[in-house]
Image (cartoon, rainbow, N blue to C red):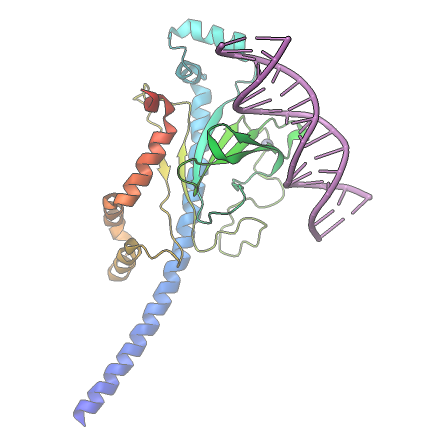
Length: 276
DNA sequence: CGTGTTTGACCCGCGC
DNA sequence: GCGCGGGTCAAACACG
Ligand SMILES: [Zn+2]
């Protein structure tokens, strides 16, 4: 009967371990969610940072990158002032990955938008949607275009145009509520499902000193995604604490599909290079 | 009934 | 001028 007892105790152990595992899994999920929220915050902050930097640099690079490449510091400003009027209309492009393939093109970025048009474009089967900031009647000039990416329809390309002259969403709490109980309209981030790549367009490579960091938040995939990477991560999280994130990143960069996606995204973000 | 989306018409710049 | 492509308008419509 020793054997039997050993067996039952073993079963007990298995049970508790399983329970442990389950709780850890839940914790993992919430952590994932929080990570995603952080990533989104980070992305947004970075976008803002880019904008401010662009502002500080006086949009010099913006116009310079737009094909008139005669660069003489004083001329530039004159030209800019002359032709660009008071509002420099910064544009920035961000790539957003959405897991649901059919979704209507809504990039929730904390602002509220009103759609005012949709067009089919020449070289992209999916239509392009035009949005205006809903504060437009109050004088906010910001517009954005959203279109699915040509080759990777799970990506949305959002092109922002202009700057908001008001705060992010005066009333509704924007996309980031500090915890999981966000019962907002669209803020649904079910189990981590979105990855953003932000690449502020006006910065080509000429500007080595300021390399626009491509903010990539890892696609924290939901339960549907059975990527082997998840297992790695889970193992890491179980074995150790968050110390192994770097290893995770390493595993990520070794993942061919990930690197391919990244390469595609980067290539897409640099039409100049692409053409050359 | 107010509000936001749809969708074809319209406009405008550009190359031929 | 004409056609094309991208951007916007606004009437109709959907929805609460
Ligand atoms: Zn606005």
